[in-house]
Image (tube, rainbow, N blue to C red; front, side):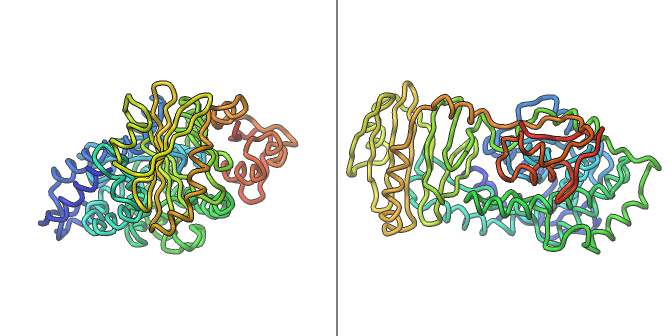
Length: 471
Ligand SMILES: [Zn+2]
């Protein structure tokens, strides 16, 4: 993500005045619209690279159609908007300046209708029309650099051609813009819903579902030692009892263009039937802290208690004081040659198994790197600590992880296929507990299924309902 940061740094030097499309007032310290679009376009490449685009042209064009209709009714109808479903299990949506809007495929299973999809997109369009990201970019530049330094314990790792460990999730894009901007995005989004023929109360429905999901996932994340999947626009109070939110939505309802608002449950469920749920098999899945990748045919067991963060660009595990980054290098030589050319001198050892040859190089008092050659691929694991003491402490775990590298067994290959959403019709007597017994989601299955079907915490399916299950 280096270019992304450079763009933001360059921005810090920009200043000037521009008219805010929503307020009509002059905004101080704002870039021109063409600079804004250029920034969005440039960063869009990084977002696509970081997350990957979800591979379903049909779903992409559906989301784009819904988004374009809303955008045409927004305060900036002449801006060219781009709506993209990114291949991330996170539950989120975000916007870059200039009309680049992203929704994760991870949020889609939790939405129940086209109106709710429109609510999420409308909220993001609100961030674009009110130019929140533009304001945030300059304000958050320093904070972003902080994130970068914190996530790269050892500077050598970031050498040319190496592994960028910048954590984009630390930026305001994903974590939200603060209460006032979020409420403004809800207000603007509700207005766009109303003018496009949807009921703006879908905004409250969506935020309520996502709030329930947040509370549920915080608990799961704690048990699974990962970061919770949290929608960026949520605040402490529950949306059902948030009086300011209720108020902005009620105001939007007076703009409603149609006495029969579009819900679009059937058409929405048709489009998400079969989408990936949770980790993406194409990016590798994590089960019990084991990383399994069907395409590469490999598995690595990470230590219990470490948090694993996976994206198409990198796989990073950390315990807070030490981190391990995993990647693939383009290098046609032996593991030992790669390590010494890439990291220089240090204590070098080699190891061997049936499937591969490997080497480990301790190239710094607080870091070591391993390279593993399997066929024409060279896998690289870099372990580092915040200090040499924390590295020494974590080193046995890092080396156990390196040596756990292996080719997938048959049962692991099956796990690596990942999970998908399937829509079925409930029959009389169905319960979520019964669905849960057939579900691969484990002990929390009933809770997940209720969340996915807007029946959390204790609802049950009604005969004839279309129900989302996970298979
Ligand atoms: Zn927001």
